[in-house]
Length: 206
Image 1: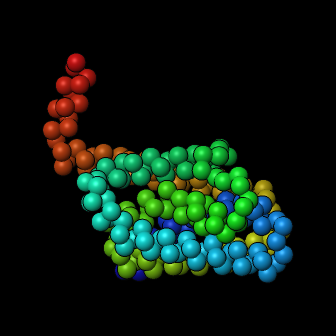
Image 2: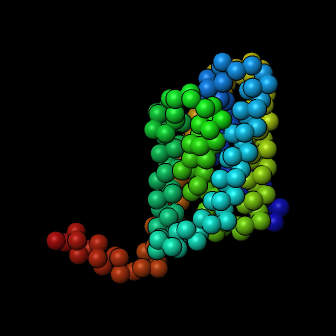
Image 3: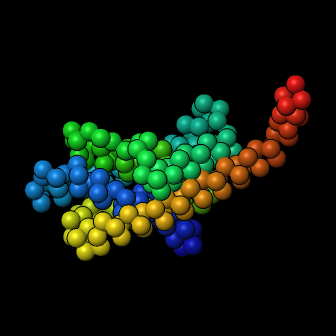
């Protein structure tokens, strides 16, 4: 189990990506004092943890209710992770918020609990099981909480340039993981539904 927890924790840490989230957090809380900023960090991580628990416990049942296979979800989830990685690498703004209304709400979702986290939580349950996924989520969010609680110090110590470089490296890894999920999901889908090849050939032939 230890190996699964370590693997899932590292993966979720990359997906939560506290380094890329730090500048957003500081921007959203720029008008807050130290105690208010720490309160925002507490609330954001607490809500993100509740949402993560929901994704883990009812994610697969939710997919089953709508007749979505894990193979199909892996393909779609891989696409989401690929786009998320490209967003980080090229500095795009596909999901990042611009409103500063309630900082901790925005940080909790969609910054911390966006499509990438939903996808990864559900896929990890199918790969390593409930307990390792929950343990990994708790560990990762604990690290995120420590990052946010000490956001100003970390940025001052590490520097914005170093954070930007590390975030882009993490973005590249997320994009590669997304491609891997898409390919494996497609291969498994073809294996489970071989008639899809015949249908595709018929469509192409037409």
